[in-house]
Length: 458
Image 1: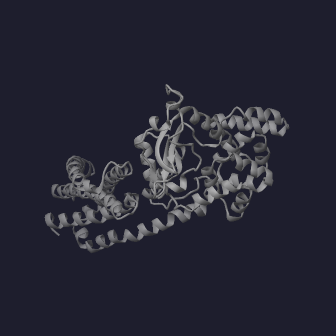
Image 2 (image 1 turned 90 degrees about the horizontal axis):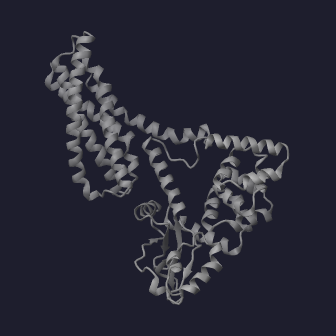
Image 3 (image 1 turned 30 degrees about the vertical axis):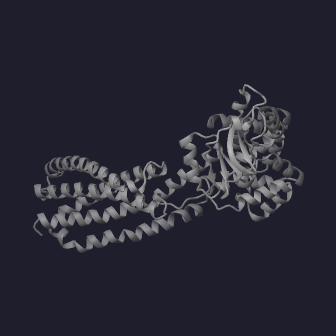
């Protein structure tokens, strides 16, 4: 796809240079709006408005939604009032809200001034909901039917009002705005009798979410039930909007990206990597690096307190990096597995005893295998091949015992900390590899020197 886009981009650039605008338009109208947006995002700023104006009105609106915020802002600033109004008229409310949230205040004021009163009212209503809630990502454009309507009347209503709705496949049945059921277009088209009432045809066991439900929980419901759309109700069970599958997919992507950044020891960013400045990357990375640097001071203090032991058994020093790395990797394995299970809603805090017991058994198997391999490696490589006589069987035993115990403790900590973070309302990803590695490093050193002082002459 990347090579294809580069070819199209170069072709369009050549045609624009030659001012063959009808040909450019003919090429663009055959393309998907997402592909057009990708090309527009890569164009020089001076060419962007011209190419965008060549798009048909409906395709232009769909393309505009897919573009990066920087390119959207550039176009909005260059639009006349009538052009901006035309684009806004083609947007769904939830897409308009997404754009408003990304724009600076002066651009937002211009958008709202050109939006029709009904859209402006709906945008303001959605913006009042808490960030990352179901209400903040819903759209108010859905097909509503009444229980007493016939199949024929319902189909006629869909024909008359469906053109402005984000989806018409699932229709929601309301009585005085209260959600009482749903019916699909398939049900209506396959109904045996056009005079059949909707209340006789509708599904009354409707799964819905509240306006204040967390968007991550909403995304999990889409994944679990394979919904195309999910109704959103207020505290009185009144229908206020729907969330469509494409919005849920965006939430899944955003949440996964956020978790990966946190687990990597970075503050989440809304910008893509290539659009982030060096200072943006610095701001998101340096707080965690400073925090982890300070927390690593504990490992330095432990080593300092056992300098006499290291002086007596210098051979022990060579194995510190291996033990710390093994412990950190073991803890990271458990934490990533548990965090993923939490995000998929596979485990609850009540499952903690079962999780710990499973990790203990896994750690015993991993620890025993690693300890055995480590013993062979120390005796063959470090003692025989490298001819290091200071490495004795006792030293090898100390290292192997420490490794087995470190793996055990690391896997328990890696499983428990994310669960505890979730329990107290923190993002489990916060307790991922950076923190767990630091904690395990300190504990592995304590174990190492504890075993060493017990088994070796100091």
